[in-house]
Image (cartoon, helix red, strand yellow):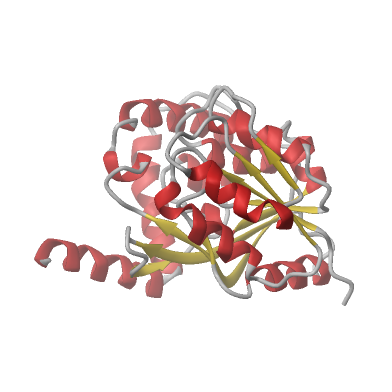
Length: 269
């Protein structure tokens, strides 16, 4: 199999605690046709020293200021030379063998534009808390809050990213989900695969763990949901949402059981 060129962008900003592990999780894949780019708009915590150590193995390092995470990622992908794109934040991980699995899926499925895989939820110490499963992609499912999405296991063709005009730079909370919806609305074919490809690190200082942008995220999600539906919300959506959620849970009972076990551990732990 001829290996497609895969571009990975890591956005780094004051994540020195986790950055080395993130970089190694990508470089240690041993993938022969890797184009790895790190974007750091101004870390002051020693992150740039870590990046400098790995510089000889990187395709590019971008150190210019940006207008937020989405803008930084757009700049990273503007420098990319690959056919397949993916991105791993400085506090997350790519799981072993992920890039070969991604290459295999894209090579075998020529009609696939966007790949959605599964992953793991880990804590600040890298301990696995539970498995994460991306729901089967659906615009209406997403709009009704019934679609989970493992960003660290999301890869897409260069053309799909370009057709969506990249990340929305005004979105500072869930730019990853908006890109997925924009690619689908631009005509990309989204395919779910069963591989566990990435790990999402949840801890107190992260956006998700801290909840510091919760209100802004709700506004962004409402806007993206209306975009996915192609219309403003209706009163009937309140009735449709629980039905979509039930359908998601029934479609993947193993993932539903994992979620229930995780909640029970949280309550009793």
